[in-house]
Amino acid sequence: MEKQYYTYLWLREDGTPYYVGKGSGNRAFSKHGHRMLPPSSEDLIIIQEFDSEEDAFFAEKFLIVAYGRLDDGTGILRNLTDGGENPPS
Image 1 (spheres, rainbow, N blue to C red):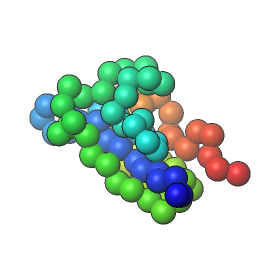
Image 2 (image 1 turned 180 degrees about the vertical axis):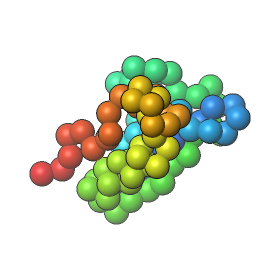
Image 3 (image 1 turned 120 degrees about the vertical axis):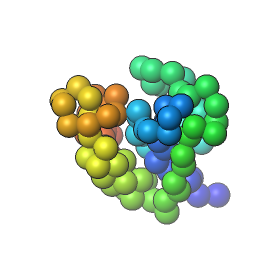
Image 4 (image 1 turned 60 degrees about the vertical axis):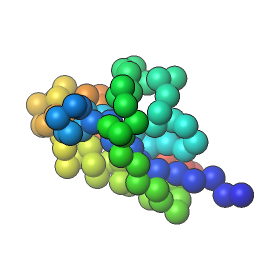
């Protein structure tokens, strides 16, 4: 069975995203490997699946640019990078 990749958005109670990531398996629902906590409810997590890891990385980077980052003054996300870390070879 082929591995499924996705992007995920963690949402605040008001529905605005605070974090965008790329994952597979249970990553979107786990604290492990994140510097912040996932939302308290799975209803506050949006998942979009992709056919390849490369497509999921592209979507992650797109969403981070679209929503912008708090740390660099461009938007509302708590992400500290522009995404796409450890891209497929």
